[in-house]
Length: 291
Image 1 (cartoon, rainbow, N blue to C red):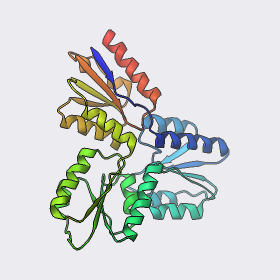
Image 2 (cartoon, rainbow, N blue to C red):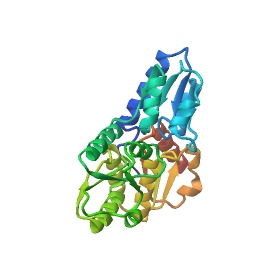
Image 3 (cartoon, helix red, strand yellow):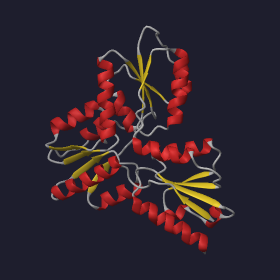
Image 4 (cartoon, rainbow, N blue to C red):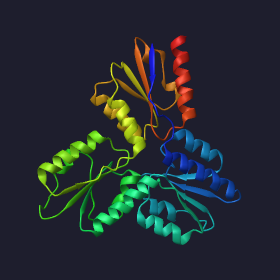
């Protein structure tokens, strides 16, 4: 069986930076309780490891980040915000209440938040292409009540647009170019006053392009957490190309039956998975095919 490993794999820059900074925070505050608001990144392996080091992860998706912060009783606690982004009101509350307060938001998400703020100040009406209730989307939407969230071209047709207004279209850092292009095409039919900013991060774009360039593949394994948007974007892209695709979260998710009859296997990874995790699964796959 031919095995193609799509490069790059492992953590992107934003994830690697967040993990490194959190480890430094753990070492710096060994005698204090450390609360992580939301998962640092969508990676169950990583969260389990952080929990073993005493980090308390607060990640109730039915509660707002602000309410999670308010649930912390210890004012002297160390509080860390996830890499995905956090709504503005939660950031302000945390910064005012906790002396040891760390925002580990990815620099690309921070850059997009700054750009959205600038666009609104200059009079643009921002339409944001992202996943509903995703932490990054919630962070962007918190900037101004005028921002509109869309997930697909269908949502564009539901909007009440005014041709006298100037619209700016941006997207979540992990949204694929194909989804953003479909949304832009629909919006272009509705209005001609569009400022489109492709705000998919470089790491996500590289992996999207890898999937788009795949040929003659019988099965694609995407290594990533099932709750990870960047992992699911890779799956969606592959399925649009009619490539049989499965998300692999643990090496035990790989079975002999899954690989039976496969002549060409491709393996890709989400940006929230470490290279060590990827290598373990690659080695397991190779061992499974030999047995």
